[in-house]
Length: 455
Image (tube, rainbow, N blue to C red; front, side, top):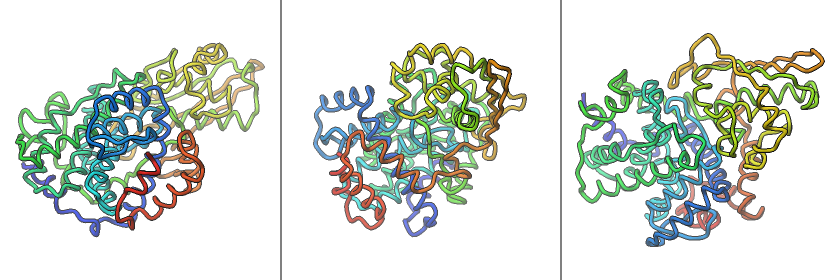
């Protein structure tokens, strides 16, 4: 089996004209969403630090660091933008990958596209190909890969970023295979760092790694050309010698494109995707029954073992821990009647009302198992039951969260989210101009005017 070489050939051969219109449209939505959350992330503590660090390194001014007004080298811009894009955990999700596809991918593509003077069509082609690579590798190595504790956003995202940049650089199949070999040795990111600034560093590092791997391969740097399938290669090592299906990587490439099916989840809330069903259910109960927070005696949430294992902070004390706390997210939904960027500051997580209420949130594990990486059952329905002090009890089940491909945000909702995020950095006039540029992305001869607005 020559999986790596076959994948490299597919990356090399795929053209814009091969891509279905639906994949292009979904890519434009995902790019819009990712640019918005990157601008928001530019204002986060992690975003401020990574921008300051990147600026201190110097670097030829070839690629924009969004929201910070300067340019640097493509690898460093990819590092900064990738970290900022994931800083608020508000970015998209793909369940084949068991991770966040756009945050390691788009920053790498943007950095190199800007430096190369690429067109909007070039950007879209590279983005769709990179998305397909990381998602299909995910199908090949999950669920074992994710269950071992790897953060697939980073460990698989580096391959997507590498493929996308290699496509922009028009590398030969052999050089693309070598780039994958380099990327495999740069693949890293562990889930124990969830709830810290290092989690968003993961996709930043992956984006930088993708730029590095493809650029080194372009310069004739060598690496193993069978890295996915080799005895000491990625699939075997990163599944712990467990189950993997390499045929899933190439046999289903583009048939269909993962952007189309199963698609991408656009987040409605800036926290871990495994909280979203429960937040939807809680907000629905709060809005329907209009009870006061102090009336709540107990909140019980029935969720999958997988979701519970990911939500590692039952008693959070920081904003980042709060994003991985089922208890805090439901307490915030009850207290504030909404869950947005404002709910995730250290002060909001530490407020006495939230700390007291979250202790009344109890987890119940669903008797049926859900497994990361499954196509049709990426997670099980969630049921939230709220018991009031006067004896009343209300329950709500949510099968698919808002933003799921089968329960999508409308175009106006997506634009509203972009405006919310971008307004932390840009004026409304600039936001309008960015939206106009993105609407016609495939017609742009160069990305310079767009990036000048975003910088």
